[in-house]
Amino acid sequence: MHPQSLIQHQFPLQSLNTFGIAATARAYLRVTETEQLLGALSDPVWAALPRLVLGGGSNLLLTGDFNGLVLHIALLGREIVGGDERCHYVRAAAGENWHEFVQWTLDQGLGGLENLSLIPGTVGAAPIQNIGAYGLETKDVFHSVTVFDPASGTTRAMDAAACRFAYRDSVFKQDGGRQLIILDVTFALPKQWQPNLRYAELAQAVAEQGIAEPTARQVADTVIAIRRRKLPDPAVIGNAGSFFKNPVVTGAQCAALLERFPALVHHLQPDGTEKLAAGWLIDQCGWKGRSLGAAGVYPKQALVLVNNGGASGADVVALAKAIQADVQARYGVLLEPEPVFI
Image (tube, rainbow, N blue to C red; front, side, top):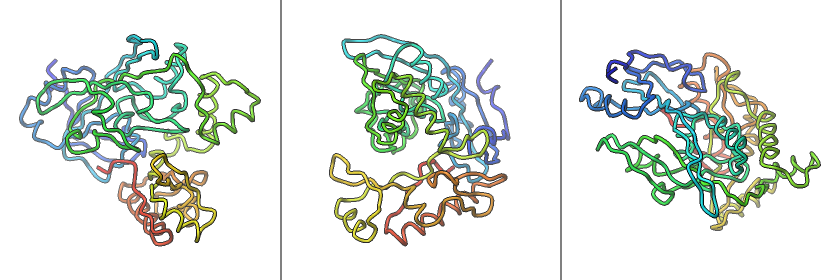
């Protein structure tokens, strides 16, 4: 069947974004084969439309209907593709559920991704956002990615340097890479695995269980327990996880803030800058558990904005702006949203 005949019109997106925002796409294609991308985009009508590449919809805020073509990446497949003296190489298609993929690697006896357990979304989104949690980022275990370039209709591989990873950032969020569509991702998982317990909360939780030498599975289970305790399930309460990035300031800015706010939560970075805890800033401004219309701040974690039922994208934007204004007025720091606003 020709890909263009698979395109659906006026397609509802509410079930395809974890915020549960009601919106409609002018056109929608569920991509299960790479060839469908080339086929759909070879038509000048569809190629000229605005384009939204959708994975799990977990890092997305729909602010209205999308007057363009949604390409819902549903490519599946995962395999161990080789190894060398240092690493096992594991590849997964972009449409694979991220958490299920992490658990699959553990089932294969491969450690390395366990700290990123229970993060919502798909494998293809991991390098875009350089997802990270509990002392690990995607870039730390990344080998390469295969992308489709709509401009040329070709596919190519990209290594870590080409991806230009940074804190919650990559070339795929920047000019020159934003148009690329990720097809699969290959990870390099260490053969000489050691538990990553650099994150204090995780180390404490492991210690409290009396585990002296945790396995990768035990670390994963601990991460899952922490996340379930702190964060809402998107299937129950609409949300996109952490809504704001932790702001990074200079050492001098941090020192000045500490003089005024001695309890300020901050983490020294390798380059001498300081990363501030956005959740703490929001909490101190009194937003934890508060609502503005149908959108609110999760009572257990101030970094998470939630859809309390029937919220529109505009409701969430209004709440986010109110929080940003309060934090900036009190601390002189502008919080930057993590989700992409569409």
